[in-house]
Image (cartoon, rainbow, N blue to C red; front, top):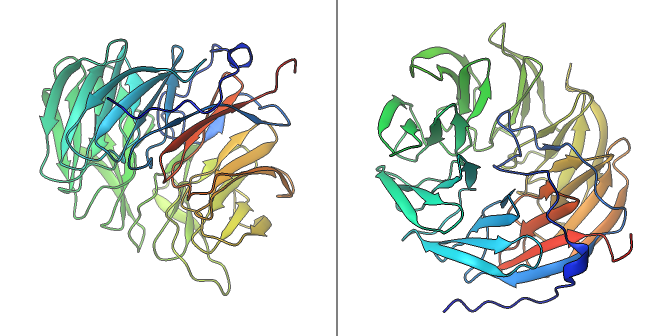
Length: 366
């Protein structure tokens, strides 16, 4: 039996809504941009315990919240009440974030297994084995699913039965989630390259030298791509010209970027292990604002309305003003937050390292 504890459940205030957050970073371009705002004052609507901790970012769809646990189980919770719907044992710890598509949930585990599970029942449908740990969160293209592995390959499988369509060998671990742009798959990895791969055929179309290895996922907007590196830089890339447009680096604090950026028309929001969140201009990487905190940030920020939401390793979930970076709402969890926020239906869902999955929303009557 799962040692499940629903900590607080006022059912009337957490409706399922019609929006969704079906994958890591919310969309196929990995923008971290929610197409809705959140209530000014967020309260805990429900919270549940997941044994051994949560690093996986939750997916939200069709009235359910899906999240992977370090205990090797994928969990499905009711988005209204937090009640457990089902759990599926993968056999290895789950750090990858689930993808919900075609009425199925797709995700990888620490033993190299990539799984397809029925979203309604939790029944395992098929498993594909790679030769390395899978932390890369999957994306979908037509009837296919695409992800990377620590065996240094980028994989494309059919959703129907997990048959291999193509795979592309890289020169290092593939940690980040692939993004889609114009029929191409964009992925950066530990080989220090941004690769552009034909999504249909699996041919490598081009590559851009980044100089340092990348653990973050690449965010794409308007023919530009953005990523933080372990060389302490944030890069802006022109995808049409296939070149690095600009490089941002803090003048004194030299720390790597593990979190993936969030991108809007006017902002590139990046959190770093230098204990800072900053907003950069998309065109040239110039700093709009910087806010410093007491602990590093591996959680990838999400933009919802006029605020930025992010978690810290010091155990706080923060809301910052998008234009100024001024701190507003915050919630102390008492445990490191490595997962990223998921936003759908007026709610924010996020897990912590000690294994608490929170659903935040508005108070009754708001």
